[in-house]
Image 1 (cartoon, rainbow, N blue to C red):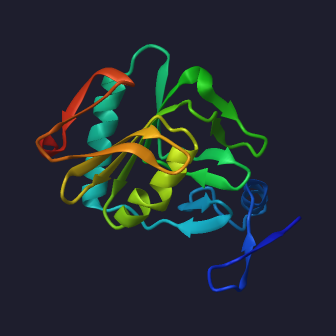
Image 2 (cartoon, rainbow, N blue to C red; image 1 turned 135 degrees about the horizontal axis):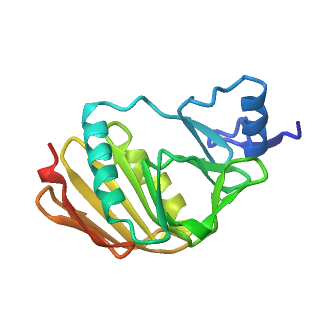
Length: 195
C-alpha cells in the first residue's frame, strides 16, 4: 500500500488515506460495508448514528422527492459518492441525472464534477461539519445546489452558485418557508409540515 503522509495542524505527521486504501480495507474486512464514515481529502471522519428527528426529515424528503423526479433524474439515499482519489462523501440524499452516475475504479459511485444536481445533508449533531468543511467541499466539486437542514429546528440553508472557495448564495429557509429546487420543477415542501 503506497502511503501518503501530510502534516496535521499541530505539525505532527498523519496518514492520508486514498479511496483505493478504503476499498482494500473493505475487501479484507478491516472496514465493514455498513460502517458510517466519510473520507474527506484523505482523513477519515466518523459519522454518528442518526436519531429520530434526522430520520423523520430524511424519510419525508425521500418520499416527496421520489414523487417529483422528472424523467432521467434519480435519487440516492445515503449513497457513497467518490469525488476524487481522496474524497468519499455520503449525502443523506443526492439528486442526479442517471447518465451522470459512473462506477469509479475503486467500485464506488462517481458523479462527474458539476453534475450532482442537489445534495441534501440532514443534521442533528453534525450541523457545524455540514455547514462548514463539507459545504465548502461540495462547492469545490461543483455540486449545483446543497441543502443543509437542521433536523431539530427545521431550518434549511440553501446553497447555490458553487465556486472554488464556497457558495455565491446561502439563503436560510425557516420551517414554514417552501423548499424548491430547479432540479425538481414539481417539488415543494415545508419542513414545518413534516410529522
